[in-house]
Image (cartoon, rainbow, N blue to C red; front, side, top):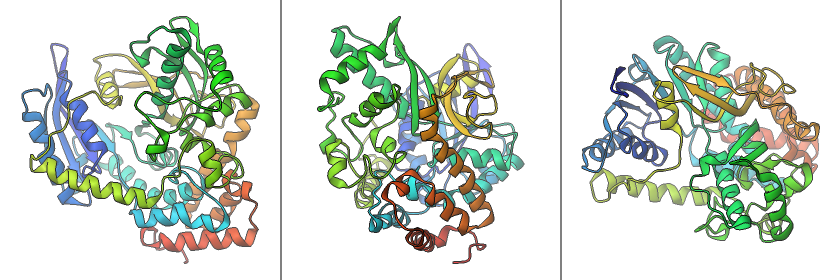
Length: 467
């Protein structure tokens, strides 16, 4: 990297999963809107054609007159080629295909177990992790061998187990996980404050929060805006609007597989006194299966949706078609801020700024003192020149800790199961998962479900599994 006049040039970024038909375009957009950093984006993907398409799209975007950024996109053929000499590595991959995810999400429905996302917690998240962890073992080994000093930014789910695997394989790795779920709740608090007070918050970043928890099951223990405690404001709003919930302007939960009316987080606030800080679809999957996800009718009553894999397959087809249009200059990427913070974190690590954001890293600094040191937690951290300083988040209330601990314990079980090909550990994890326990299936039913789900994802599991 070269430093000059408050700018950094010749940054080398390895993008593992560089054929992405979604987040890659978000990343390109943010790069094109910033003129303080520049360099080369090295794209690596097992689908080389997808990476080549993104190289065409990225280079075309940077050639536009309205693009401030100066980046070159090129395709690499191996992890060694993409990582050697890089300053940053971004990981954004789809572990397996939507056919495997269909089993993850929908096979448990035979036991009345419904999942609204299926990529982080519950049976779907755990089976997805079992095929993801071997991929991250390979990636971590390659980073150790070819780019041990680079900063690694993970966007892949299940976030906690992906980052946990990186540190397990290469303890000295400089890795962290980024997730935008917290931002959405900051925007909700901004909107509720404006509705309750009639005042305007110009930038949701000015809603300052203390983040504590694990990925997709994060909580705010503090939230304020310019000296105003937002907890009483939030509580007052809920007392009047609990049945209706709250929707951001232009969003309608009934018209989207990803939106919600935030009634689950309002109910969790009434029950536990903290502001749950992820989308309702994710929050529901960390709670017992006889609560928010009891059946589709219950889900509907809480005003969020079950994201089916058929919907995801249809959406992928649309994105493939858009990729073709973008690569052939039949459509242009819209240059508007995306709301993601990845570029801001890169700039801070380059020394151009200091920035505080929520981040997924090991609890070794005991950011949350009453969770184990080996837990992979999500809290705030200060980003500065070549360093991340975890911010002490404080202890979790015991009732909220009791909700989180089964998942922390299952992270350990599933990582070990993936590394040792141990089906019995997976059975134990299923039996201790709140979604599964909430539906009270028999041990035999759980064993049969685990086995069938493993068979359905066998193509992506190491040979050590006896299936």
